[in-house]
Amino acid sequence: MNVRGQHYRTIWPDESDSSVIRLIDQRFLPHRFVIEVVRTVGEMANAIREMHVRGAGLIGAAAGYGMYLATFEPDLMAAAEKLKATRPTAVNLAWAIERQLRNIGAAKTLEEKRSAAFRTAQEIADEDAEHCRKIGEHGVELIRQMSEKKGGAPVNLLTHCNAGWLAFVDHGSATSPIYAAHDAGIPVHVWVDETRPRNQGSKLTAWELGEHGVPHTVIADNAGGHLMQHGKVDAVMVGTDRTTYTGDVANKIGTYLKALAAKDNGVPFYVALPSSSFDWKIRDGVKEIPIEERGAEEVSHADGLHAGAHVEVRVTPETSAAANFGFDVTPRQLVTALITERGICEANEHGIAALFPEHRGA
Image 1 (cartoon, helix red, strand yellow):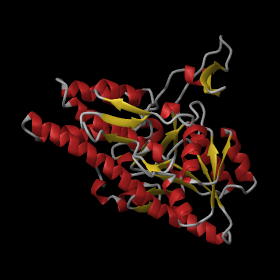
Image 2 (cartoon, helix red, strand yellow; image 1 turned 45 degrees about the vertical axis):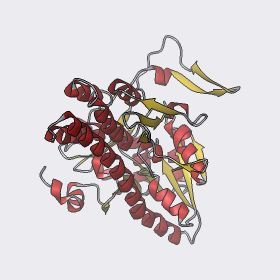
Image 3 (spheres, helix red, strand yellow; image 1 turned 180 degrees about the vertical axis):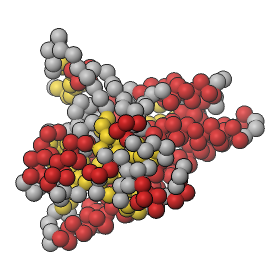
Image 4 (cartoon, one colour; image 1 turned 90 degrees about the horizontal axis):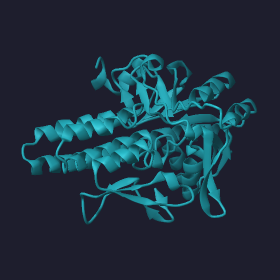
């Protein structure tokens, strides 16, 4: 992804000192572009937990680099547990840590373990970027077909939360087909849900779409159904933090409501994800996927830029309690299709197994 004409990944090792990891601190976007320096497992765990980095793929990559930093500390397993405890819903987190533990464990000397950890972290990041690029290749064909049906008129897509470049290492999942379509000259317009309470849509998705030059409009979270009723949405494209092998999708809170509105209005509802976001053990997403509950202050307070300064204000009564469920689960029957790096499939056990036969019966 380009920022003011310069290409960035969301996370990368320092060129002069590989024991230092650099990442884009998303807390300051869209008003400031800040690069954070991370040197320890504790700092990486804090960056994941406090959402300096967020998004399924990026959480996995951050955990991968965090495990590399753990090889500079005395207790590898304690570091792994510290990282695992940061965000419970995104399956990429544990997947990356377990992958690192296997590869580190296969090495003998400390130098070999550190080398294996760095190599694995780089592989996780590179694979994430490449898988997202391939998601774009497959998903752009869906947008192309919509454009042809509309006689070349702009295709109106609705997103929820941020499943863009900032949520992965590069390209994004749900945004990758959008960027590919825009770059191919297919006219697109994106309705960007603000995505309360942290506003990842209005802050992050809108910012990166703007950096790429993609036409977009920020809307209130509850406007999506209205737009669908009036024929102003051609398709919904979202990402996922964890998808079961049967096709149930966990994504940012409010996604389920968008899927219901899409179903009622005959609007296709697509979920884009790299294979690292599949959970090959969980069958029933509603009953089994752990849903992160975050601090109430994210609901009771809002932040933004005022007179050039970053400010936070309370928006609820002092005496009112607030609950902050981070995710919900969209059942497979509401999902039109899944867009993966291997192609597009139905959101059910048979369709997923056809693309990923090595996980059949896992």
